[in-house]
Length: 216
Ligand SMILES: N[C@@H](CCC(=O)N[C@@H](CS)C(=O)NCC(=O)O)C(=O)O
Image 1 (spheres, rainbow, N blue to C red):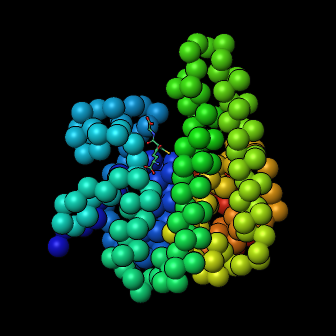
Image 2 (image 1 turned 90 degrees about the vertical axis):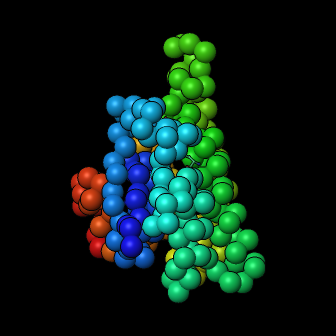
């Protein structure tokens, strides 16, 4: 059977999917996409994902999946024993809510303003204001996430789910860019950093220095 093909960029949102692949102990082919060099705009990549973004996962049957949400749901459905998606409908609503909040609000509306301010600016003079707006949005949104995590569960639920690796990648970006995480988000982030799959992914993606700041 053909392998899963995984198109990824170290340190990007594809890190969340990379973590799920390692948690599931799957065998997959890695296809690095150099976003800084503009690989996402090349015709050969656009033929795979016309959105021009990572992550992309090509299933063994050849189906092309894009976005964190679609890929993570597909993985959870394919490997139900891993219980990456809960059965209880209230828990499911919580997982979907946190995952979408992390991907759409924290990443899509917040971090993109910091990483790609030119896409929100008419000219160079506006860039600093766009970045500042990104910081403000992110801090407010992590504060809301903090309230949600205040219930004191181990992860988003009491067991690891697709919401945790989504939340992790934005927490990781906050740490990497010097944005302080509120208490419960910090606890969640540090708990995630103890998981062997997370540590392995960060090592493989070149973040061993960041890892050395946190004990196993
Ligand atoms: N919500 C989308 C976001 C994807 C996304 O923005 N990916 C970024 C990397 S974190 C990307 O590939 N950016 C390339 C670009 O926009 O040029 C998803 O989950 O696929």
